[in-house]
Image (cartoon, rainbow, N blue to C red):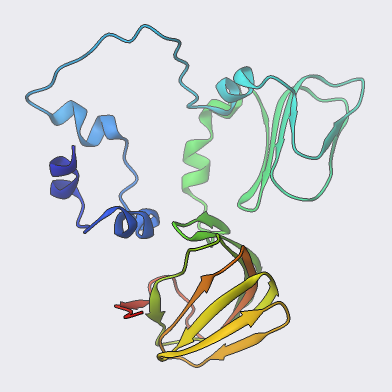
Length: 235
């Protein structure tokens, strides 16, 4: 499996592959590997299996009608809500519906019609609003023409890649936890209330001693996920 992965994807190790996951080709394992493999063996599976490939099949597997903060009034029938945001959702008089709320968007659909969502979603071009990384996660809070504001959470003992950006400045405002910031080789301990500024071109990273949360503000005319160069860090 590793040999096949290296044939299809250029990566060095798991961390490198995880870091570039969002840029990989969007194709299933079946299409990319199984259907093209000339020598393959199959083992019979004796457990339960349910393909959760649509919103409708996902709701059938839910043990409760609501995940997250949501209220259904008494006139709702066969309604499922998945809410990933810290805002309340109220459903009234709905029947056979699925409601999904996340940072990427909101879906309100008849359960049967939800199977046909893909061509509509494929037409949407949008900034990635949430992602999990090997070091933690980030959520986009605000998008402007010349700025991007992100909430970053680093897991204890983890750090970002040592990197730089050519076309944007960055500001880190630590809101909780303790960590260590390295900017152009200079190390600094940080805690809640500390602010770190980085001009375009400087190399920087942050590691978490405890769970570390910070607000990252990106400033520039051409803010892009592709504007990133990684470097080795000798620590």
